[in-house]
Length: 176
Image (tube, rainbow, N blue to C red; front, top):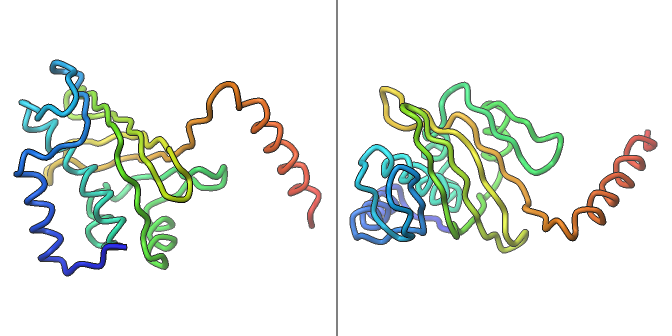
C-alpha cells in the first residue's frame, strides 16, 4: 500500500499528469488511438479524476478519494448487497487500508456536462475487473456521480458461475 504524505502524493500526481505519461484511453469525441493525450481539456480532466480515484484508494487517502464524488453519489460493488450511498461507502472504506487497481484501459464518452466511462482494471486478488460509471461537470469540476465495479465473466463460463450463485443464494436463504 502507498502510504505517502499528502504533499508527496500531490507532487506524484502532478508529475504523472504533466509528464505526458498516460494510460490507454479512448476518447469517443476524438480519434481512438490508445495512449494519446486528449485535446479536449474537459475530457482530460474527467480522465484525471478517475486516475486520482485509484491513486487515492491505493494510498487509503479517503479525504482525497471521497472529494472526487458528488454528495449524492452512489457506489455499486460486486456483491448484490453492495449498493451504497456515499455515507455508507465511507463507513466501509475508512475502516480499510485501501485497495489497489491498476488501470489497463479506459473509454470515456462525453455528452455535454456528462461523461460515461468504462475501464478495465487489474487487481492482485480478483484479476481483471470492470469499473463503469458517470461523471458530471460541477462548479468544482468533474465529480463522480456513480461508480460500479463488476467482474467481467467470459460467456463460456457464465452458466457454471451463475449456477454456483444460484446454489449459494438458496443456501443463504435457508440459513437462519
